[in-house]
Image (cartoon, rainbow, N blue to C red; front, top):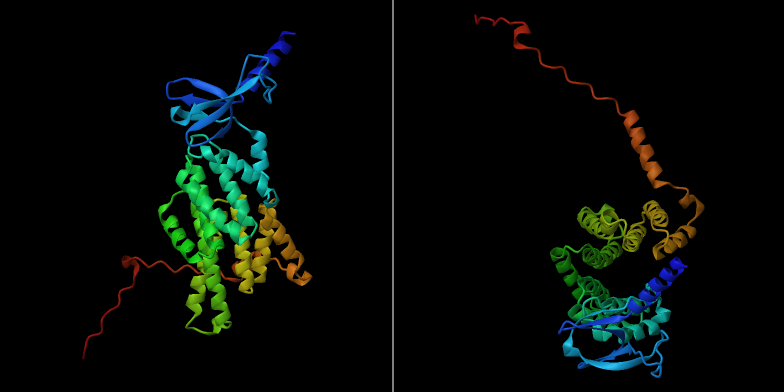
Length: 348
């Protein structure tokens, strides 16, 4: 009985604490549910003792009060795990729902611990996935706003990555590349570095493909061979950066590896494309790129799939080691004392 009572009291305490808490500049606290705000006033639904008052969602009597925004030092926002789960799994067909969540939380974007910046970034990312030019423009404006106003450095960094992608989507690729180069040179944030490298990789891939179209027989032209190698090595270096240095980041590593598959296919290196696609399906099976890799592999002929680039390379290496004779050690020089003396002939 005592255990049951304690359990009930604990659950009641959790329910009571699941509120937004306004910390006022005079040191007091006001707990309730924030329902709206403008530039001057925050409206808070608070519980009342009177049973005749309107009932809140929690079942207790409630009323709405206004608190001057200038009196608020900070806000402890109520945790909402269900909302967070919905946002994590949201797809473009739920854009309207995420947009409504953003409008509700936007007034708090500059308040510490506010989820507004994170919600806004998710909205911008979903807008980009629609491939709609108008929504791409709206996402660019949204990311720029979050960069300027969010309290969270993490949200600002995420918005910075989104802004680069939005610039490419709105036809400002050259400007995005210039900014990506600056970010790659100045930033130490791994996520920003990954995104900046990806933007540059896309540009480098375009340059390589344009080169290959203009020089289909580049391997026979000594004047352009070095250019091809420079372009090829550069784009792979950028695409493979996340998988080499941040392999636990499934989404970005798979995205970079899929970019490498595109480069190998354009370069007519099908065995390398096959092996990289297989790596994606094994290392990052839950990603979109894993599905694309499976579709690519399914489109190939059986004789193409029969090739195993890694096994062939190992076999070639082993054969080379067995065929190469062991180097014969050079004889060590004899000590001076053991060398036979030769007599000089006298001139006649």
